[in-house]
Length: 353
Ligand SMILES: [Ca+2]
Image (cartoon, helix red, strand yellow):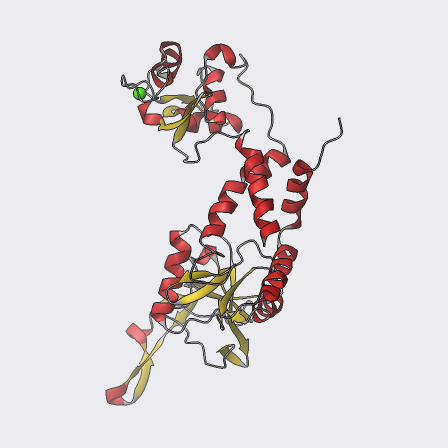
């Protein structure tokens, strides 16, 4: 584990020198000598917001930032079809990247926006061209997100290492894992756990809230499959419909039936009206394993068991030996996207001159 932590720290240290300090999308760094971040809306608003040199109110910069007939912070974007509109300068710069937007904004402004850093104009290339980001730089740029993700997915003071506390459970969100359903289950079982099974609706709600709160975007395998009928791996039947299952669309008309107990009769609901949505596995199922996927807002769906997703483990036994921890780490690394390790290692290895 110590080696793993060291590996992450090294990566983060290495990228610190080449990136803007500002990670929020609406912020820009005050300057090379200042690590303060301010929101775009405070640029050229007449108040000094940057602590040193008032970079945000630099007259030369503000002359360019407010140059067009648009509100402050916006510029004119001309489209190929002849139309034009005022857009925010960051949006304009992004559009310029894709050549969707033409305008007269000084390219040095977009240079600063792309770098997320205010600079003296004399220090910006006149062309405003930023050298294309290499794949290595791109993978480094993702490390802060990875570090943030680790905090809420495999780490907590009240759980063994590589597990985090969610409600009353110790869970492990191996969001960077890449395993089939059976591999994911074996992975969890090796460490006194199993794939996650919600005890009840509240348990499921707590899980999904945790994933949403911490902005997870991976897809996770859950402890359920269709083995004859839909069952959790503890043999409990999986309740279909609300509140667990995702809403699915079907192009063909589905006339639902409703049971009227007082008449002991089943009739067509609402006089045979057509319905196109249902809340259950597909019929026939698109797969026989249960997953909670980001595209379906983490409601459950039937997925092909051979697809690779992250395992979501629940600890069954709180005793966790150091040998198990070491094995867990090895399997964790084995399930990582190997290209991330490779590219990061390239940066850490001594380079040939
Ligand atoms: Ca200001």
